[in-house]
Image (cartoon, rainbow, N blue to C red; front, side):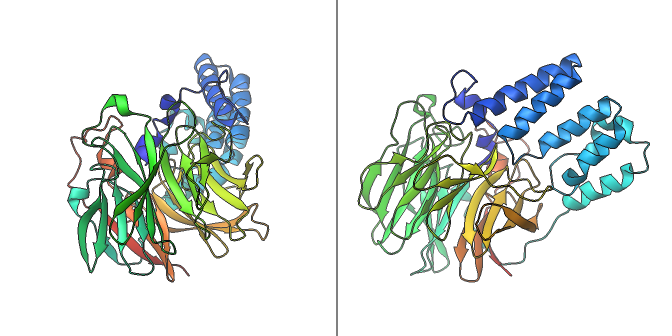
Length: 425
């Protein structure tokens, strides 16, 4: 949901005076504003200091280093600028340094052309290898997907229409409408053991019939798979605005769901009727799809704005999950635990891509990473789920066809929504 994600800082309205918990979101926002002010006034030392605070708050953002290189280039520190840009060049960051006036002092250096080549290579398309599953254009905007391992049925959520669609025997049909008119369907997850499907709903501008007065209202809805009967509907705890956007189901049936507006993750224990927060509100800036470690003790939470974190299920503060110098862990929308690590769908900060992350034995750092698919052939990815031998990905979601205000872009092409089945090697 990257089109919506770029609006979250404005929707949250969090500043240094209102942030709670670890203050990462507030610290990041304050540092961004301080950097902009310092750059405008030419106070380069103050700009460097602000970038240091940004990096501390958002360890998954290599665009901080890119901004530092621009500052160093402005200051005439050419060698320092090239040194900082080294890891950034192979990260896949969605920037064009050749068009950046701040980097003009580097253009006459013999190191410039090879650096541009590295940036281009990191953004080069990598075609996905796997069959596509077309999704009806009427779905409008696909956010999430789930597959029932028992029957092979595939479910997708439509932010545009507010419906959940199901594919069986090669045919799609609308299966349920979990929210009132003007409410989009977001996360979907199948619990085959208990025979239920969980879906989250929220009102956003991209939904048909959206009403501004409904913004910030959200719910977790549970259906019986056998007959699409609604079994339960749960609201998040606490006042303020909420958006239950993504979730994962533990083997015991516990539902773990992120709240993109409240900046936390909730747990719904199997057999319980109430969502409980695993972290204080605004611990995260924009938490996305959580992934549960095999031991069930750690929840990996990708914060689209700040990077990848490990949250102890038993309680405690989330810790950043560091990686190689050229890894960007910000911009992750969908996340999936796989043997040896994680698979992530990234968008916005980087070229749209599907990335595999290998974790250390203690699962506290990324040891290496590789791009599985990237660029126009992949589409506009949002989420990824497991399938035998590989993954199923929301490739062309349709988010890119809409503005942040929810209107269809004038130059938007016809919807060509599809999923991809990819093998993992």
